[in-house]
Length: 408
Image (cartoon, rainbow, N blue to C red; front, top):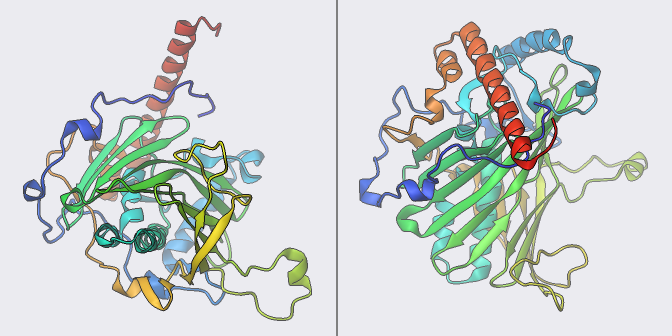
């Protein structure tokens, strides 16, 4: 989809907030999964860790099938895609590569440690609250990348509504086509916290790896008005066509609490050796899943707007505490574990609401066909949906040009 979208368009007139917010006693209670329960990745993936710290994709039979299909597919790709081009605009084969879910459903795995936000809401100390929010974000990263099949790209206006077992409500909508933006609102039990924001997924491909960037933000708001905003790191998926399939994270997750002038930087693989240093080092490289969490109080420069300011390397900071851990295992501060994969509830999974809107992703024909194991029809319906979306994008672009007096 090469055409640039002049505006971000919303296909549904009512936002999730305007539609309905149910009280806790109105929500469906968690029951045994039925045929419409999401098919989530296995829960024992924390054991599949490489010696160097990555997360292994250990299903050999599935890998073999993906690579057979993948090699055939790559032969048809232009060279620029294999040299770092964006793969979001090409139609991937459904067979072997796709899971029967929309990306909107997959997004919920970022919030798999929701009870930690409820604990954060109970804290009277802004410092303790920030620690729990950091733990929530780190634990969700581990859960989200465990499934390494690709979900379906959402269609503009597509939605997903669900609840978690603790009555947390989930509202997600695909609010932009190009760039692809998913907007979400998550409301905690008894509204003690809300989580909102948007993500723009961008994936680029090299010969044997994929780089995934989640642009956008998450913002947690508590009943006392405190808001904590954070971003997500970069994901690298290596071994696409040969070698061991490993997922790794890179970068820094920054959190900011502007009300209390607190910041936190979770640095992934903080002891990584640079290229030149590694040439002269005799010791093994440190595990790349390790993290260091630095919490500090920052000073807003004179003339800057405290409500808009975001710290950077030039910001004056006063160190408060330092935590450590692993995005695959745990996060702790001063000897206390705020998140441990062993304690993550395996039953905390989204329960799709009954009678959703017609725009709900569960009505997608390609998703339905793949759920039934019909690869050919899933591929056909996926192609039809993509072509329809491209055509509608051209109409919007032409309409924008006409309204603006731009020659086309």
